[in-house]
Image (cartoon, rainbow, N blue to C red; front, side, top):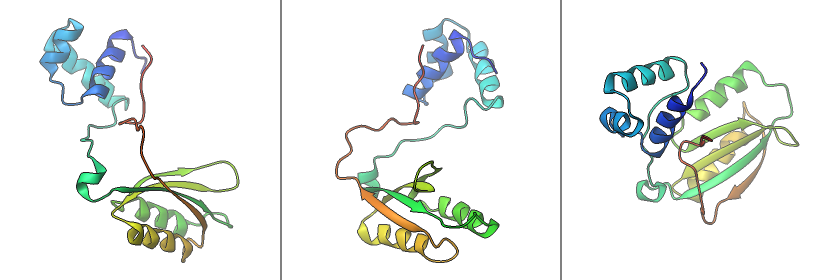
Amino acid sequence: MTQNATDTRILQILLNDARTSLAQIAEEIGLSRPAISERLKKLEQAGVIAGYTAVLAPEKIDQSLTAFISAKHQDILSDEVRQALQALSNSSEVIEIHSIAGDDCFLIKVRTSGVETLNAIVNRLKEPPFRMATKTTIVLERYFEKTGGITLDG
């Protein structure tokens, strides 16, 4: 789907606050509520809008420790390891898993209640079926984090 300037403005409003009402978006953009609703429906159907979410303060929900785990797997990934990665991604502490270029195979972002929980995740990666070598970097202070992960030029 090709976005035009109006779609981009709608997306910028939603990136700033996904709870912005259709009426507010319509007023800001200068279109009717039904027109905004139709544009949103098309953006959702095209997969441009993948979902809507709440942004939680990690320290308020006992997930104040953020870490990045670099993991290296020696073998070609088997179906068993792929399924285990999927199961790992379902853990509430695992925020992101990326396949990366370079010496390591994966970069995993986690948020946990503390070192014990982090250690359990790292140990899980070292055991079968993963058998990965890991390197963990603990975040001391978060200076900036984009919610939603992206911004739009426009």
